[in-house]
Amino acid sequence: MTCVIKPFTFVTITYKVIRFDFLVRDFLFNNHIFLSSRGIILKIGGGSMFLKRMKIGTSYQCDSRTKDLINFYTTVQLNDKEKDIFTKSTILLANHPDFKSLRKRPVSIIFSGESNIELAFPDEVIGTQGSYIFIDYQKWTRLQSGKKLICLLEEFVHHFWDTTDEIKTSEIVCQFIDGLDYDRKTGAYINI
Image (cartoon, rainbow, N blue to C red; front, side, top):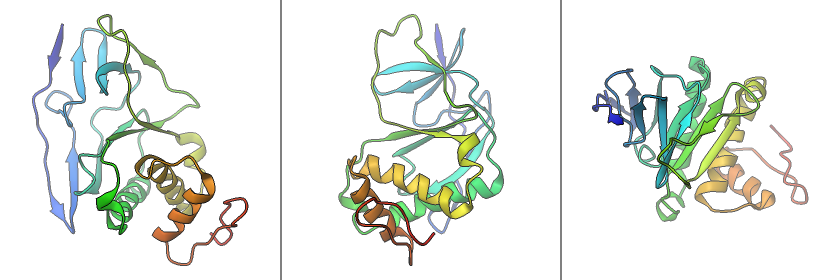
């Protein structure tokens, strides 16, 4: 039996930023989290899966224009500076001139404290689909702040612009950050 956790979301709008505070017994974010006898279920796409070791009681900020498009999950505790980088990435995304015309399929971003994540199917689920961004926190946290931001923006570009082309991705990422440039042959950033 799955029981739905009742909504309990504090929303504060400041400069078009929304803050989400999650509490263990009283939270529901976009109807994506449920309690089960087997633990936390992450609802992805048409089905649902268990995200093992998910942190409950976390909070983050995102631009209000992205709040229905980006689902944030983590198995680690991001520090305040890292949360600010995440927030900045959503603001830059929403401020891009193409943002309004991009696809509006939601994506789940998962920060993992290990080089892998563990998802498991509930007994009643046969299959599922969805869009994901996986961030290996142990590698990401060692990057300089600018590179952390670029990493998040690259993944958002792959998803919302629906591209796998790394050169095109680098070109679009450079549109977010003044003065950032890239090698036209490799896509590598040349003045981070």
